Length: 553
Image (cartoon, rainbow, N blue to C red; front, top):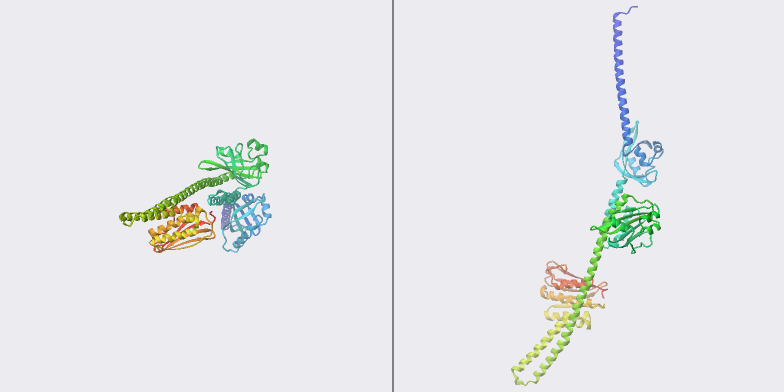
């Protein structure tokens, strides 16, 4: 049967439409192939990036690791993914840190707030402990809920932070005291936390010396290298470090290797030490000593340890230099104290001598003169008139002069101090001073302790100066004097009801607003280990208190 033209045209149109569709499908297929190729390329690029990134990356689905990168394997000491898949998720986490990691994981799975970044410790397959910083997010992996975690090894950063903290602690220890002997032990404890060492030694020597002194030792005992020992500088590590002005790291293969380089460390080597690290102690561009760190482990130290030791040495060298200066200052102070005590003692001896001469020689001569004049006066006839009156005046003048000399001699050195003691002498002085100045002075004393002559005369001089100041400046009417013996000190106080001080002064030798007498008193009491204090308020009088330790004798 013949096809009609219309049917043929329809068939051709359908065929053409089919060809067009096939062409479109081929184009779509080609585009899809290009897209998949791009995706595969991107996936390979992404995988390569993930595999080679420095941070460790792990994807966990449930309790299984489904992906780890090379950095994760290297961080944990693994060889391949199979090893990682076979181990529990918390296998590498140190037991002490597992609870916190588990708690944060559960919180994240429940959608609760949890820190995005936190730290914990892992133990590698080699046994080494490292600190990691973890950042984890929830994702979907192959259609299943999963966790993507990025781990960064922050062990070196934490160690650096700890080193900075330790160095700061060492700085505080060193600045806590001028006595370097008090500093050494806590200093050594902190150094051990920074650089593992079984023995720490500090030697002191100058570049012009031929010996060095072991100033401090902490750790194992080594013959001829104990604290206080003096050894020859020649062929020692101390000499080499001083010469180089730089650190020295010696880790010999054997004793013969050490002998070829230095003989100084041989006693330590024979005692079991195998690694030696030494750095110079430099102050004001002068090498004053050497810090030595020693370990029983071969090859125990690295260049990094050497750098750290130099930082530590720079700190302790300042403490040693300051201690030297402080020691010299103390020696000078002691010399000055002894010289001042000698001057004061000789001054008191001179006062004593002058007092005796005034009392014995001048006093006796005036007494003889007064008696002679009195006898002449009594033998003169009543009608001698003017001559008799003149002689009577001479007798009276001689008597007045005798009294002034007696008071002068007593002021220089009261004989009562030697005769009746301090308590009665102070009471008598208060009574006489009250008579001269018309001040109302009350005295109370209770000292039974035997005091040295230096303390006795110092307390007496203080009372003289204090009462003189009250009479001249205080505008007081009443004064209370008290001598007390406490468990630790003997105190002498003088309290008045005068106008007081506007600002109660602190007595120092450099003060300009106080009388030289009080300054001198303060210096005298300081020489005896005592002090002078002033308590005062405007319009409320003043209280001066001198104290000296009971043990001074």
